[in-house]
Image 1 (tube, helix red, strand yellow):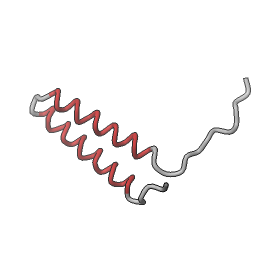
Image 2 (tube, rainbow, N blue to C red):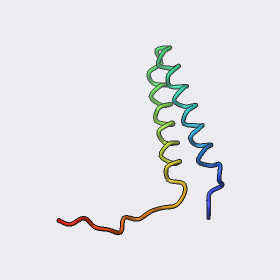
Image 3 (cartoon, rainbow, N blue to C red):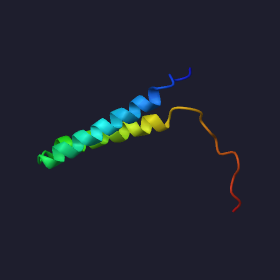
Image 4 (cartoon, rainbow, N blue to C red):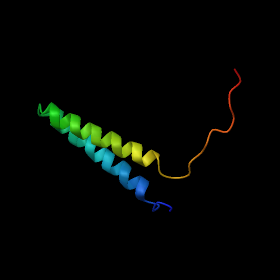
Length: 63
C-alpha cells in the first residue's frame, strides 16, 4: 500500500505546528505543555521520514 503523495508534507507541516506550539508554551512558562508538543512534533517528523521507498543496506562493511 503506497501512502498518498502529500502525506509526508502534511506530517512535516503538523510537526512545524507542534514546534511552534511548544515555543509559545515555553515562552508562557508552561514547560509540561511545551515538552508534550515537542514530543508530538518529533513523532510527526519520524513518521514523515518513514514514508516513501525503503532502502536496505546490502553492502556490509569490512572488519
